[in-house]
Length: 212
Image 1 (tube, helix red, strand yellow):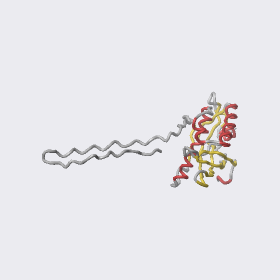
Image 2 (tube, one colour):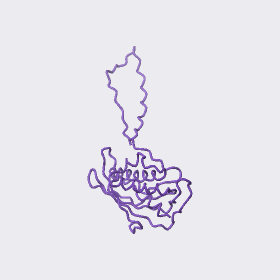
Image 3 (cartoon, one colour):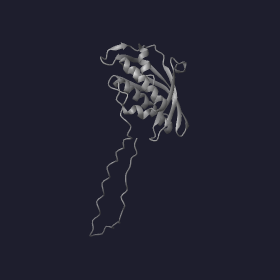
Image 4 (tube, helix red, strand yellow):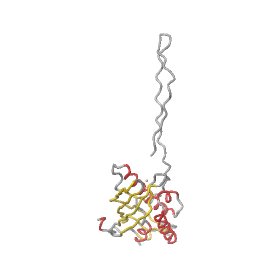
């Protein structure tokens, strides 16, 4: 049933580097004379490549996609939290698509009670032998920063284009319903020592009027 896909991806909600360089010390400057030709201009140094921020890569495979309608707000703190919330969503979807709960991204973006809930849901998904294909859409994504290390969030998820499949064969067990109403999710984020806004708690309301 489509509810299998919805339940399996229940948690899927809502994830730079500094350019650097060194200035060379100038030991002295020689004034050109008739006997000493003008020094040739030095070449500009190669631009410094941005460094990777060491966030784990997430592979959703060729048949599943998370679509986020709300990417940035202009507030750097809120945008960082939204990015990591999306990272949590993608990490959970990755675990379902590949039937692997030990992928690095899952524990990178989730902790505490939320991680425990994710693992329980995944155990059920794996036991049922199901997975998903299609596209889930997230909208009305909102983050409320409480202090320098805590925030709350809410968002809506449309899973009407998500199909439930048999993991082994890829056969579609239940197609998504075009009329399926979206669900609303809410929860808490906390900033860890690596400056990642981890999802640590969540709740949801299926067929929420707040997502209309």
